[in-house]
Image (cartoon, rainbow, N blue to C red):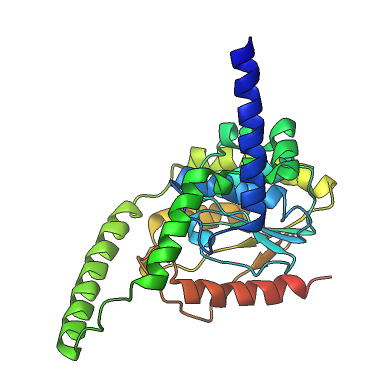
Length: 291
């Protein structure tokens, strides 16, 4: 019995000391151990700091690179390896009601991750994360330790010398070749359209979810994330886009479509970070102009 009492006391003392440490000290960069943890951290941030956001983006890794500034009224709930339906499910099951939800169209063929959504919106889970920040995933000891190691090495170890013009040119040529090879691979992936029945099932779920969100005062905005032009016209993207437009036409729903600019992608599917920021600026300008 005494052993268990001592164990509990030790745990409480450790928890208190670590809570104080986390409150006063934090590394500049906190790495994630996996994409699953990346998504968990994103949801926890949404349910805490982001719960009063007026504009919430839901999507896949394609939208993940848009990084709204803190306290801007915007929050990006895009999840790597998932689609917008999982983000919408989290929003539906949470106690938050933004003014607008911005829905990425590209990966609406991806089914809702029901298990992940319900685990992360469980009332006890939300209560503990809001009231005991030390329990949040990004504040776990291993993440903090690695974050401090990275910060230490960045400060005391200088970067390698800049390569000469010849080496830089060779590296650029290799990069272009690899990028072209990857583009051809992605074109093969996206060459087959998504099964229509699967898309119809996703549209039925999306329609039901939007009705619940609209009942809470949330207005949907659809948008398509820019990709490499050859991927945007692929069979997969074309059928997904046409199916969403048919079920949620611009005559009845808000759509942000940017056909004027060409954006630089990093791998045919995802925009380079500066380009994602440029697209976000346009998306913000459109959404914030709405009444």
